[in-house]
Length: 199
Image (cartoon, rainbow, N blue to C red; front, side, top):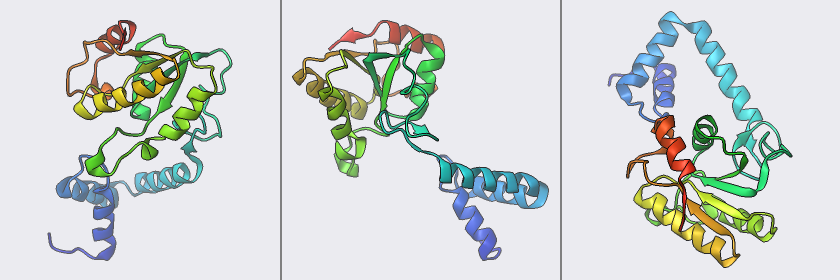
């Protein structure tokens, strides 16, 4: 692609950091903001800067939040004996919208992938082990994606939980193999969640 100047090239390249955005999409977004919606570009820049400055990980569950503890972890009405372990913050939203689950969460922010250099430390497993050691958790619900990596991650965590005598369940079948929770319809997710099984 021919250069249109360093500022435009830099903006196009910046948009490419988003998932699913290739060179053509990044170019269209850049031209749209510069030619038709500069006010929208200003709002986008301000919102992005504010989010980057304010949002952090919850110190307990690792979901994205503006406070030290997220609203779920600081809610005394939630069941602290149940811990649902998910790969991504978007999985928490999907479960909250589709089920009546009222326990707590732990967000791994990924799955085990030794080839990509993602091991237990990167997923917060030491922090999860500390939660297990507190002795409050009676059941963990493994809600990692039903992919090869998600299954390996679930197996690894289930071994840790069972060594602490914590009852371990896994979401029931109904979620397509190779699928991701974020894209599963709410009926399927609700059925899989309510039909979880011990492993």
